[in-house]
Image 1 (cartoon, helix red, strand yellow):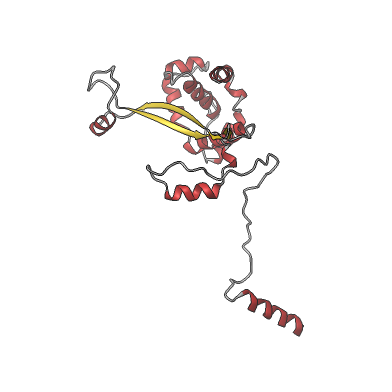
Image 2: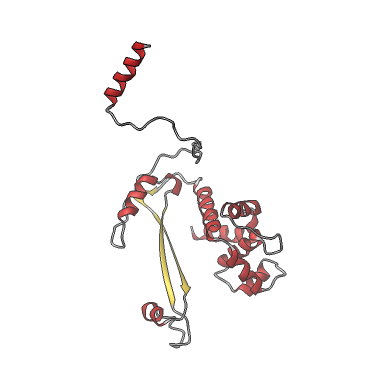
Length: 227
């Protein structure tokens, strides 16, 4: 498993645009209401550089500029990355996850529920509150470093599009830090099923139902008889 993951990451590093096209990035930005000028550090080039930065272990901005072959400075890349709307990145993540999960049909291994675990860390502003709560790296002298938060995330191996939305919504409504991870309802695999997400423009012109259905039927029948 580790070898296949390493090979997959290496393939993405060689050509990130093969897995996330420029048009898909621009489309996500348009849907998020983002506007930009066409220049070297447009949305596509910035997202590709951001992907390389993550894939190379959160490397420095100065390094990622060279990795991506950009003529811009590290400061310009940082500013372009800050301009990316969070909603656009969330859309790209959702679509990439859906595409990756399309080839996965089994949610269990030998009958057991399976998870993917991934850990990461991040530095935070140097405030007394964060220092006292999170602390900092043991390699740094106190007062000479930033607080470090360590994260561990667990992802259900079942493709996200097959999880019952209603079931997940009910669990989230009552979830807390002490709530156990429940087995959510998994819908059957339906690769050919497509459901458009649209709304009707015209509301229905029928009156509200204020009488029992039996009485409404009797009234309709009486009108038909009189006619």
